[in-house]
Each structure stands twice: as structure tokens, then as C-alpha cells.
Image (cartoon, rainbow, N blue to C red):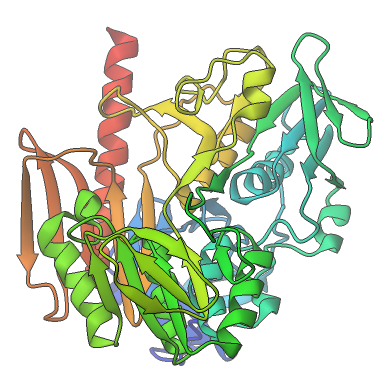
Length: 516
């Protein structure tokens, strides 16, 4: 998770020749035992911290685009001018340094730290109050961005989980594998919310009155809102077979779920993972890191076949097999007993622990009961507005128009939820721009990170450059000759360029519709 960089390059306190700085090309140096990124833009030179504030990615290996730098690991984006975290998954800004140019030499001088919610002197108008139901990725990002925009009205986060918000992707990766302490899981501590006047209510919302504009909580209290953000997320699908409710059978959605799996793995010798989803296979990799035998049971013939295609799916399967995972594909579970799992072909698998990862369903009950339009998710427009005035929906529940295709899609990606939360905060405070961010997610299997940019529900061609398993590759998923999605391993610049190009294409298409 941590990406602490060894100091390299020139001492920027002493300076470097201005003529050696190529416009838009980052130079990695250091100042006072800290890695610093120096970037020239015409007559201006900017200096910011060289380590991403999300998981410590090396920004010098990222991509500079105009006044921003993009992290190669998980595509966070920062302003080179102010250090502000412009796009999730990073929330904290970069430190920056003042820069002097004298006699053709560039030197950094004073360091400038920034508050995570520094509003840069902005003041944003908006409704009297904003209530956010759900303190996961999207809800927390919305609350933070409201304050960063300079909104000074009441902000209330409602969520029944005491521990929320926290870094959910880590629950199936480093934390579950035992490589990250629990201290890394929280996105913010309680003091952060108090300091920035964001009220955290640990309670469950039970009803929404869109006419009276209030939310009823499980304790009977009502909370008024000027704007309401629904970020209720999704719940795991559970097996419907005998024994599926046994104590040693788990799903993975929350921090408590991950803790329970860890506790079970500490006593287990053999685990059965049901499903070959991304979260299931990350769980398999994490449990192998704990030296537990893992069997994977799934009905599909190839893991990730519907998302990555057969070639890449087989490659990911081979990664797991090289680490000792045994697959039982084309099979389903018929029964779970105390120490074994029975499959539909009568195979018996010893199992001290069972983890089920067969998908999730969006939590749309509140929205449906409130009379909002629901169709395989909460239907929203390009600004993430629902059918009720002043009510927005983001994250796993939001079914929004893909700006590139016009098709309504619903994505269960962490970064998408965060960026939608940020977009809604902008919309609530007067920004008229629609949501055009390119979908992005990453998955980790042992020491292999895989980046996925875009969205391809179907495709008619996959073009692969490089060979999976030989160190690096990238794959383009095409429909009628148009790249719909891009998958890569250790080709970070290609992944970042694709994301930026797809976003610009979406913005151009929407601008054409408006002008037309």
C-alpha cells in the first residue's frame, strides 16, 4: 500500500538549470529529505510533493496533462498550481513549494502545507442543508467536496456503521492478506468530521419524504434537507442452498466482514471461495498469502470472461493456479456442511471456511419507497439528479447515462462512486457541468495490478499488445472499431492517456449535443 520513494535526482534547494526543464515533463528531485516533483509550463515552474496521497504512488512516473498530474497507480489527479486533489481516489492535497528562477537557475524555497479541505478562498452558494445517506466512498467524497467548494451550510452524513467511512478496496486486498494494519483502513478519523463541521449520525435512514424534504431515522428523528444525496451502496447476494447461513459462511462487503474472514482464516486449513468475481479472486489471493488452501467454485468456464475475455481470463486463472488455487469451473454449490462443501456434480470439498462472492444488488429500497424512478438502480440524469427535485443518487445505486454511448449503466466501482460524489457536490453548489468522468477500477492479484479504463458491456474485437505473463501488456476492447475499454498491466501511461482521451471524447460529444 505504501509507496515511500527513495530520494533521487537533484537537490532542488541548490537548483537546476531552467533550460534542462522540458515543458510538461516532470523532473524528480528532492528538498530537505522529501521527494519533490518539478514541472515547467511555459514561463511557470511548479513544485509539488512527488508521492500520491492515496496509496503513495510515484507521481514522477505518472502523466502531466495541462495543469494537473495523474498518479500511475490508481489515477488520482492533482493540481500542479495549488496541490489540490482534483479527482479521487486521492482526497488529501499535495504539499507544494515556492519556486524562484534566478539567472537561469530554478530553486525551490518555502514549503506550503495544505488543509485537506482548504477551499482556496472559494465561497459556494447552495441550499441551506445537504443530507447524505451512506458514508461510503461516494458519500464521504461528496461531504468533503462540499466543504472544499466553500459551502458553509449544514452537512449531515447518515450511516448505521460506526466505522464508516473506510477504504473498502483494501478489505479484499492488503488488509485481508495481513499486509496492512487496520489503522490504514479509515478514510478519516472522527476529529476530521468535527473539525470541518460535518455531522456524522450513526443511524439508519428508514424513509424519505420528498415533498416535506426530510429523512426519517430509525430512532424516529426527522432530518430536514435542502438537497439529498443517496449513496446507499449495495448488499452482497447470498447463496440459496442448505447450510448457506452457517456461522463459517461469509460474504465480504464491510470491515466487520473482513475481520470475520480473517478470524476464520486464522483457524482454517482449507477455504472454499464461491464465485469468480473480482472480489472473490482477490479474496482467494489474500487467503493464499495467509497460507490457507483455496478452492474456487464458479459456474462460468473462464474467470472474468464476461469482463476481460477468454485470453485475459485464462491468464488471471493461471496466476492463481501458480499460487496453488484449485478451480472447479462450470460447477455450482448444492449444499454447505460443517466441514465440507458439496457441488452439483457430487464433488466434496473440505472447507473450514466459506467465502461467497457472487455479486451484489443495489440498495434501492429507500428510493423506491419514496417514489423515485427505479430501473435496475436509481435512474438519474447526466447531472446525477433523480426524478425528485433536489435528490441525487451516486455510486452502486446510480443508473446514469454513459456520456460516450448514451446507454444507461450502473457501475460498482470505488473510484466511480467517489468521483460521482465529488460531481454531485459541485452540482449542488452551482456547477452546471454534467458527469463525464471515465470509469476506472483496479484489481490486485498477488503482485499483479490490473487497471481497467472505460466500460465495455459487449465488444466484437480485443486487440492485445504484449503477452500476458511476459511482464506487461495492454488490451483494447473494441465495438465497431471504437475503443470501449482498456485493460493494462504495467503500462500506466497508456492507461492514463486512455482515460483522459475517453473523458475528452465524452465532453466533446456532449458539447456537440448542446450546440446542436
